[in-house]
Amino acid sequence: MCGIVGYVGEKEKKEILLDGLQELEYRGYDSAGIAIIENQQLQHFKAIGKLQNLRDKTKSYESEGFGVSIGHTRWATHGKPTELNAHPHLGEYSFVVHNGIIENYQELKTELQAKGVTFLSQTDTETIVHLFENYYQQNSNSFEAFTRTIEKLDGAYATLLVTEADPDTIYFAKNGSPMLIGFEGKDVYFASSDTPIIGKATEVYYLEDGEYGYAKDGEVTLFDANGEKSFSKKALATDKAMAQKDGYRFFMEKEIYEQTQVMNDTMMGRVLDDRVEFEELSGDLFKNINAIKICACGTSYHSALAGAYLLERIAKIPCHVEIASEFRYKEPLLRDDTLFITISQSGETADTLEALKMAKRAGLKSLSICNVDNSSIVRESDKAILTRAGIEKGVASTKAFATQTMVLWMLTLYVAQRKETINKERLQEELDAMRHTPKTLLVSDKLHERLHRLSKRYLHGHGFFFIGRDLFFPLALEGALKLKEISYLHAEGYPAGEMKHGPIALADSELFTVALMPKTLHYDKIKSNVEELSARDATILAISPEPFELADDFVQTTHDEHPMLEFFEMMVVTQLLALEVSIRLGNDVDMPRNLAKSVTVE
Image 1 (cartoon, one colour):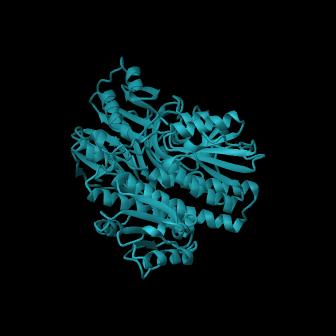
Image 2 (cartoon, helix red, strand yellow):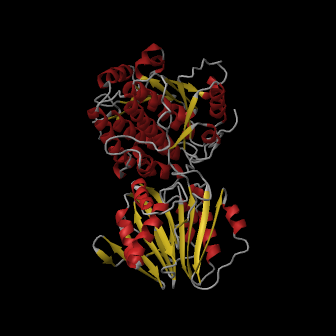
Image 3 (tube, one colour):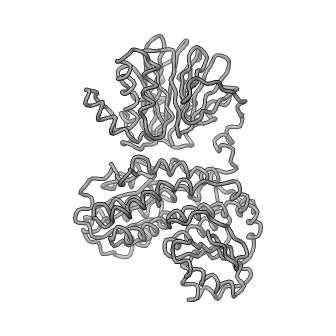
């Protein structure tokens, strides 16, 4: 996820910005840039790739005396990682940096282009600086121009703007994306998290959604919808490692909690009032396509399995899912009426990349679903959809799985719209459910404490069965994978209806069964399967909106109006269960033994 830094004061600004951006490297980025106004002069530098490239570009530059400065590390969402697309973005005399996604940027861009404004980048962010300068030309009041600009933006944003029209001031605004202000004497700092300003500022104010204002002469003036407001500063933490984790014990825990926010990022600008739209896809991608084949590994394979249920059920298109490491060697039959989809968090998964190359050689159209722009798989594919999950430091994937599954759900509706296999009423039901998804991913204190207490009962035994039907079978596979990855306990995911075809022979009191029992899909069927296990004395942990009297332990979910809402809520429960069991066993949750985050070899 992108990172922001800013500084107003007398100190050397280049190093403050570069050091601050370096502290944000853990969030992931593909380009970086800085802009400084000093002695009425605006300077800027950008570079793609690692921050060292930006350091090399600025080696001969030093800032002296009072000035304002902003910097940014970018994770591409609109447009490739190029210097033109890197932040800060330039108008005629102003620069802006921005985290988040402006949902109505295309509409704003069209309006500005009609007025003769030329855009240099492919990003949504550039609209902010041009909109600001458009308003400034009307009244020569920079704060009013900034205020009017913010009022026009729909979506999520944390933004800083500097302008030669008011060279001693940084303008700021926050809505949906995090940003804070640090203080030390007359020095004022801005950042998207604590780490860039630890050791520099001693006090901090965490901006709330809808707040905006400006910093000038060592003072910050703050506004919200009700006008100017006062605010209280807090002492700033001093532990950088903990600041990166935002107070969570592990990155995996933080990433579970982040899922509600990144899901908004994944949908933003794509889930519209009456349809799903992907600006990344051309209209002819699905022309002459009669089937889909998805290739992936590990967690991405599980999201692909869930996507296949949706694509066949809603879009009415045959969909076959392959494990990439097997696909490569089975001498597959590939037809040119098949769209070949690859899914990878890193975009560097070796088996998946080789499978993609095979499909390309066979003449198939290709689409990748990936979290990293400009990765090998994205570059090799004809088209790519970015999941926008931000960097995921925990080896056991959480938010990557959630966003991949959401992209496949959105893609299902996108295909259904084009193939006219969905009516308006059903489409609206699906869109409404999508919009409610971030709420299902919220982790309540009550839920987390419940799973913490339960976890102490699941530290022994001879194994776990995670069982589910339909969409919840892939989720059972994923739940079992999460547990085995970080707890080192044996766990298997199984279709619930298959238990009596052999696996039920293992059932006894030391076999733990995690039963995914959604109300919206085949509840009576899976209830019957769980009853069979209970009759053989298996220990049952039931996850369901419907109380189950035979459960030894029960976690009640709240959403039962759409299968995908139940899916995502139960996903969070299985992730937290794995986390808490692993912590009780004393394991390194973020770096489990024998595993790597990106599997770049066979």
